Image (tube, rainbow, N blue to C red; front, side, top):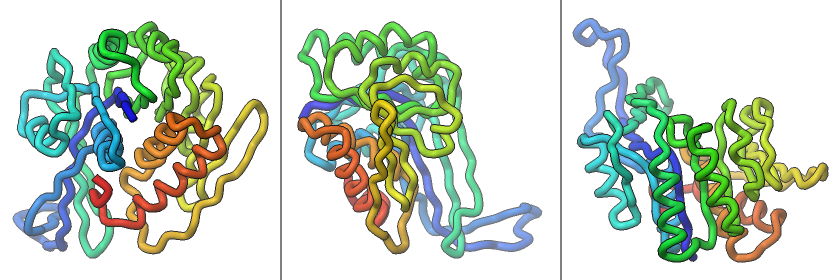
Length: 271
């Protein structure tokens, strides 16, 4: 399967450690032995699709820094980083202690840019259309009114187009896309006009909205689930199933199953 992933690329950095009290005047200090690096955002979607055995091309932006080099190492040949570069690669740092997430720091530069969407359109029209397209929106500048025409050109290809959206004032750019996959909070804040909407609900599974019809897709129970990237996994499963010709309900069932398998394993196991 040939799949395009277009969107906001991030590097996730995690530290597993323990508290150190009153350390050099710091309000909070967590000490660990080493960092763990994972693809984040659209990069996580691409890495999961590669792990499923599909041919993936990722269109995104990074900065001229160590985080971009780390992402290139993690992703390899599936990456198509567009130019010009961002001032800095988006990095999400999470620190865990005693089994809990206790701190998070984001380093990012949000600049409206249309290059990844334009590059994907040019690639598809010159080298053959993909079997599916995923728009992975993390509100870091790749999508907005400035990409409306380019997004609509890609949607007009006719292959399944899956949108992982964020609450925004530009939701109309997704008009006529196949399906959006907001979580419940995002769904309540979005006015989106895709053909279908599948709302992810974590351990409860998902709900498919199809022309006024509503159907719940339950999820099997998972013990000790790690949930970071679960929405990305769901989006991957949905896009692959639609590309294989399954209907929206069958696709949602597969996506729930794949996301459940993802959260049941240590992070990165499915890459």
